[in-house]
Picture 1 (cartoon, rainbow, N blue to C red):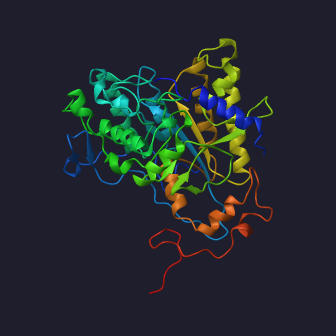
Picture 2: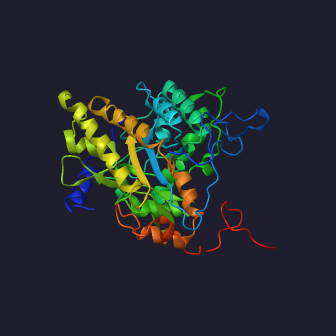
Picture 3: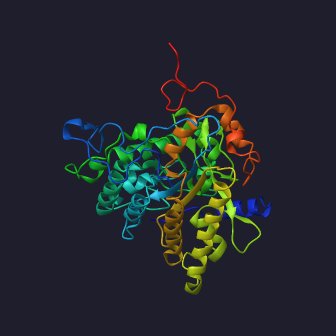
Length: 416
């Protein structure tokens, strides 16, 4: 897949770092390992041309539970992928296997143009660009077939399918940072349409559908190059999205901004440096080999270890500290010999099987946040980076909670 998070993002991160921002029990309780069983044919109701279908509730999507008074929060870790699609590198299928082996679920941000064949590229009308334009190209029928297979399997395993939009335009001259709210709505509508009409656009009408309604499945995104967040959020809120992960933040508990959960990636220790680094493979690469995606092979192992160790240090800073969710972003790319993919493998294997750790999708994290007592979340947000409650978790969160919404597991019983 095409390289993303370009120099603008790297420059923004460098500026942020210059200011020196100091500082598993499994995917979800009750979740089962393994792929979800396909819905019976009688339960499959095609949508539109049959590219997608209603198949019932998503398998292995656990019901969120409100913390009990004095209960220590779990350590959430979110692994997410920008521009998710399956190509000759087979990284989508690889990380599905790694996730299942470590009782994890993830979020895959699909680029809509990866569902559109090259010969139909003119169907894409990108804001402020001519029809058929794209910075990351389009796909061929084999690539679409392979990507659909991975999306189908990923969803049935409890993973989330988000969006990375379409043409990935960054910088000046029509980049996403210059788009209006209306233009963002057009881009989102097209991203949905490419997913909902891949059978028509490829002619593969006999293929099995994607087993979800994308209008309901799509609840969050990450913008290209982390640009255009202000107007995207306005559009997303109006379209019913629930979260955005396009920002840069410290390792603190999230809050809502403009009605969306701000689940931004974070700054973590950068081994060998005095500044911190964004939790994304692209940004590690830019600070190691610049814009050269294949730098000095003699340094590949060192660079991958640097990313792995930085993410692990960030994990323990939260796990032993404030328990803020750790948000990690990556790409299905073999930059610098694939060293960052190896690093992510090792981080998943190291953290996702630890006690009280849940490696989850953004949807699952948002679900959990939504059912918590607001007073509890306010207390958690008061903890600084790496700060554990001095009096211990039981005392820190022992206050009487506000009534939980009806039906939320863990809520006190309501007398008739």
